[in-house]
Length: 93
Image (tube, rainbow, N blue to C red; front, top):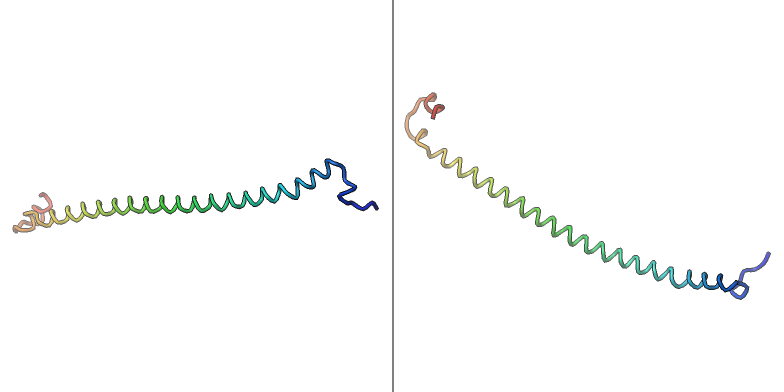
């Protein structure tokens, strides 16, 4: 069995070996760094979007609750409840 050594390799084999030893780890390191950076940015963007959506939902709930409270207050202050109307007259009004 013939022993494989760097001296016995052809020029294309040597180039492939050097390329594999130097370039591939470089691309793996750059790729992992890129993934980490993108993951961090996506996390920040998703948190900002979540907080924006939460603010919009809270504003909507606040507006809805305010309108409901105002309607109930105006309904409770209507003259139907202050005067002695019969139940049928209350329903009619």
